[in-house]
Amino acid sequence: MSGAFLTLLGSGGAASAVTISLFPQFKYAINFGSTASAAYRLNSNGNVEYSENGGSYSVLDAWCIPAAQAVNYESFATLVSGDLTSGTLGAWEALSSSRTWTVTQINPGVNSAVVNIGIRRAGTTTILASADIELIAEYS
Image (cartoon, rainbow, N blue to C red; front, side, top):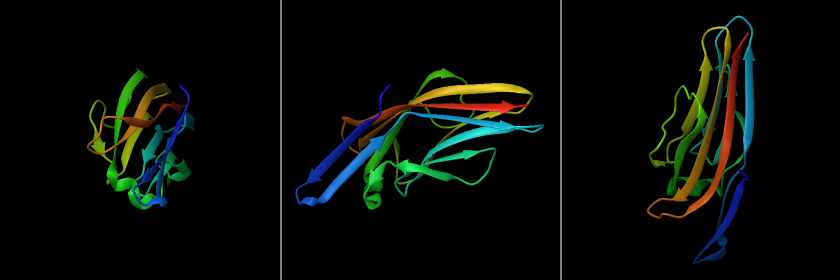
């Protein structure tokens, strides 16, 4: 699925423009001799972030510009395939809090999941952006 990008203009014109975007991601984490994990997060600060093997999060992109508008949006995740270890599926959740989806592999082997994530403005039904996120964790 291709990424989505939408700019909304409020009643104030360009000064109140909000850009909502998500792009497909493929994230692979490998850990030798220990648990592996790949985590994707929509941060409440408007950033899209990624962490592997429990490390700190790195910014991939911005899902909401300006970031102060992030509190007005919600995300919905659907499992497309695989086995997601953690993260809410099948419910709209306010992005005033960060939302994270994780794949973990605790024994030698590989675990993966594809999650489709959509974003809408709270109180509406129109999905403004959506993308498939593929997470793979390999314990080697």
